[in-house]
Each structure stands twice: as C-alpha cells, then as structure tokens.
Length: 171
Length: 314
Image 1 (cartoon, rainbow over the protein chains, first blue to last red):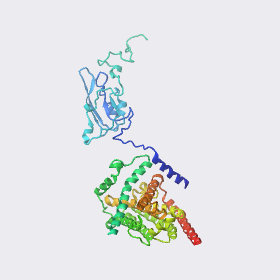
Image 2: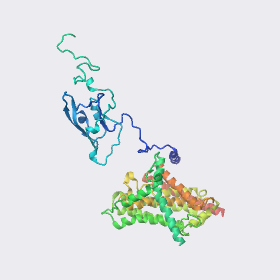
Image 3: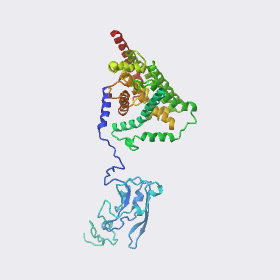
Image 4: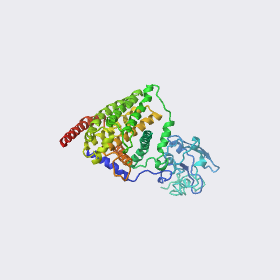
C-alpha cells in the first residue's frame, strides 16, 4: 500500500527531471569518432588510392553488399576497376574495415543517407572515394609492405630489415 | 433554445476534452518517463489531435468478414452513447446543466452498466479469440466493480439526502464530502479506474497478453470511437469525483464556477494519467481478490458507519 503511493510520488517527481530526448533535426547527437556510419574509400598522403582490390572486404561482408573488380595499372599496382556498395543492404557492422589490410575502407560518423529512390542507395567508387586519409593519416601500405611498387626499395621500408640472403653461410 | 445551447456546450466541452486528452496524456506520460512526447504538429504539438483524427478517418474501416456485422458496427456506438448521456445530468456550473435529474446517480450507474454491453458485444462480434477473452475479462471486471462503485456513492447520497448531482453539489457548501466520505472516495476512485479499464486495471486490453483485447479487430473510425470513448470515460469519472467529493463547481468567486469544475476535473484526469505512468498491471485474479475481499467490505463498512453516524447526529 505504502509502496504503491511511494512509486506514484516518485514517478510524479520525474516531471521536474531533465528530459533525455534529443530533438534530432535541430540538435544533432554527438557521434564518437569511431562511430560506424557511411563507408568511404580513403587515399594515402600522396593522393593515391589506398585500395589494392584484395577482395577481403567483399569476403568479410556478412550481407554481400560490396562488389568490386580488380585491375592493374602499367606499374603493376592493383586498384579496383569499380567499387560498389549497396547501402540498402549494408548493416554497418564494420567487418570490411577490420578486414582491410591497407586502411582503405573506413566507416565514418555519418548516418544521414536516406533516399527516396532505392537505386540511389547504391554508391559507386566515385561516391565512395574521398580525397583525405580518414582515421589513419600518414599511413601508406606500400611503405610497410615487402613488395616494391615504386614507393620504396626492397627492405628499405619502416620497421623492415633487408631480406636475408638464403644462400649465405653467415649466422 | 437555451437548452439546445447548453446541450451543444456540454457536448463541445466533453468531446473536446476527450480528444485533447489524447495529446495531454501522451505529453504527460512522456514527461513522467523523461521524454518530450509529441511536440511537432502545431504549437507544443497540440495539433497532433487533429492529425490523429484525420489519420483515423482516412484509414480503411475494415469489417471482418467472419464477424457478426450489425453487432460489430453497433458496439462502439453504445459506448459513446452511454458515456455522453451521463454528461447530461452533470452540473458544469450553477445553471449549466442539461437537466437536473432527481435520480442522477442512478442514471450514471445504469449507463455505466450499459457500457459493459459495448465491450462484451464488440469482443463477441469480432469472432476472435483474443477479443473474446478480453470481453470476458471486461464483463467480469466491470460487473464486479460496478457493485461497490454504487455502494461507495451511497454515503454521499445519505449525507446529501438526494440522488441529484445538483443537490449534492449544493449540500457541499459547508464542506466537501471528501473529508467525511474519504473511504467512499478511495473505493469510488479505484472502482472508477476499473470501470474505465484504464491502466493499471486495463486487463480487458492488456496488450502484452491479448494484443488489444476486445478491440483487436477494430480499425479506422470504429477504433477511434473506442479510443475517444476511453478518454470520455476518464473525463466522466474525473468529473463525477469532482462533483461528488470535491464540491463540483463550488469554489472562491474570483473565478467562474465552470472554471473551478474543469480545474478539479483536470486534476483527477492528471491523476489517472499518473497512475498509468507509475503502476504495473495486476494479475487478473489479484484484481478480483482486491475487489471482493478488500474494496467491497470497505464500501459496506463505510456505508454502515455513515448511516450510524447520521442517525446518531439526528
């Protein structure tokens, strides 16, 4: 009996509490830097595409919303010929970002991507590609990788030693 | 001519309060749950009522092919008619009532008993298991609470020596009946919640268990009638509590009597909504036990003690 009256009174006191509602279109909610929203393709510091079209993102995607086609330029560097994300399927899980070996594909804090036409939810490479470096400034995959793609010589990269001479006899 | 104006005025007040309550309830509930509630349509969201009405009017008014069609269509009307008729005997002000019936309280109790038909017939005609279970629960609950709803008012009737609402209000000039009839008020208030099947006693609807209970199959304007009927019921019970226990239109003369009446009514409407915000729904058998084992004896004791005191004082 007393507890019923007490809970009525305590509920009444909530009229003086601050409301939790964020009035969305006027007041934007704070989105953390690592918020998983719209997907972008980033470039490295030299404005070259980071993506090497390894298909790992497409393989990791649980809803198969990423499709791409690999191609090679004249120097033998791989790049995606087309890169297509169907955002009407995308569940923003971030697995593609985790799978990406080159930090090319990244999820950014933006979710306002509603469309009237379903077809407009399919983003092509020109829509996805941004001119910046995203969350990992200064990172260049080829400066860390073993292969020589005209960026650095073999074994001269950061945190990298010259390859072992397998035919040598020195310890 | 004057009577027609009064009828129009009473209908206007009752229906606009009931419709406005849709918005008031959502805003108040939201505040008590630390939200904002509808605030987009019009100033403070007041026009939400109009938007909801337009939506209900233009929805498909589907009559299930497996239902008992005449009864199905008639049921929501009965609810509206029985509740609106009771407003006729309520005095909104000293000279602001449709007619001063000398059996006003009996008229109200009779009409609220007839209101059970609307829900039972609606649930029965729907030919739907959940609707039928809801209607069954509603009939048991409302018949149970009807019994001591009437008994709890008899103390007031004895003190005012009349069944007429106008005479009862006049009799409270010396002091509101809430003080001598406190237990009558408590029993009537709880019975009133059960009678309008509002939360926490919304067992006939119980959306967690019965989808929407007796109005599961209703859509469009017929659902709107049940919906507004529920708010009309809240308004009616609040107005009757204000009239019988809190002096109706009586109040300091710096404000018109109608204003005092509406102020008291709105206080109880707010209390109804607060109960919805704060209390969980009891189990069905708990509700019945509370009714028969606590409230019914309480109403009887209140009746006997009031009678004894009145004879002793005479």
